[in-house]
Image (cartoon, rainbow, N blue to C red; front, side, top):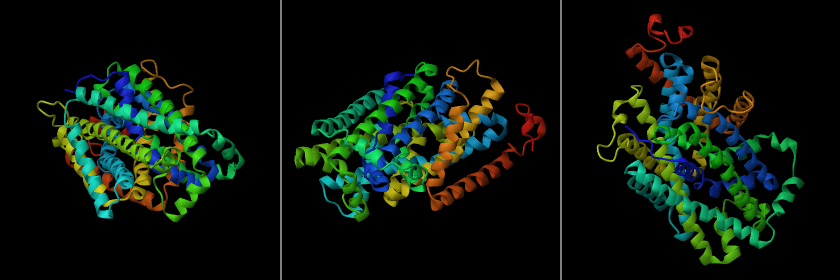
Length: 458
């Protein structure tokens, strides 16, 4: 059995190091290139969506603090003996693909910044990406208590890196210049455009991870309070840090210059260039090493959280039994962890950063994010709200806003990515139906077995 050893501080730390990976350092120049002087609005939009969505996660996570997060939420919301079987299966199915993609994106971003220190050929960059996955696998192959302590150490590096960047911009003396520029170029048409949606895809990718604590629900102390608190602290804290970082970089390197670099396909090391202009090349090397530390910290949290998802499903009898195995001495789901790590290793060798970010979001939105938003409504209608440890304010407004914003982001991922998601979704539905037919599960079981939700008989 997994043990409740993680308190509020460690839970928040694991969320924050998951959120602040290589993402903001890689996506910052992309967003500037897409939106020009309005780039700050995309970061604000990403923060608002994360905050609203965190209300949904908080209500579900506090009510069902179990390993696996969304797997349990979807199963409970749509019915353990009904459609919840398929929804939770589809979530695990897409997790086996998208979780390693998230890990691979961190590893690829690591290798991209590593090139600033040591020039490498393309195949050598791939070797670095794969090596990073192997290194994190080694770090995580231990019990949860020591992982919590190691997470705090990594978090210190995250805060130190962002603090240096922010301090550099403030000390430069033009910290608030981007604020005036964002209003000078503002346009409501631009806010509703496909281009703005694409920019939001990049910023939301950088915020993802605020819900990591839900995947570790069975290992959190006092989950009814600590799960919601850790998410809100994480989102608000990281939003402040991201905006401050953008102010800092934008006050030293103009968005026009960054936009020109993006169009020319050069200089993806904007933060390193920022430090170099302020303090020189030696300082930029130190900053780049710290950014690589941040990437490692994020990859650490991602692999830790997602390894609990297939484990929870297998323990419940809804996924392959091998994923339910727990290490005999270190007490963690090592088979689930090692399989995800193996996929992440392969993906880090096959894909580029630009191919991954939109795919990661598209795979999550329909089944996980929107599925959970609808699930909150179903659970409230069925069970009421009196027994909920956490109740979202202004219900159902956050649910409506979350669904509308996620649909806009899904549209902005682009046609090719949406088609790829539909292929994954369809394959998952086919596999589930074949399995359900053999096991005589929903929708193939007899009507007498649907006592929990008789209205779901097909």
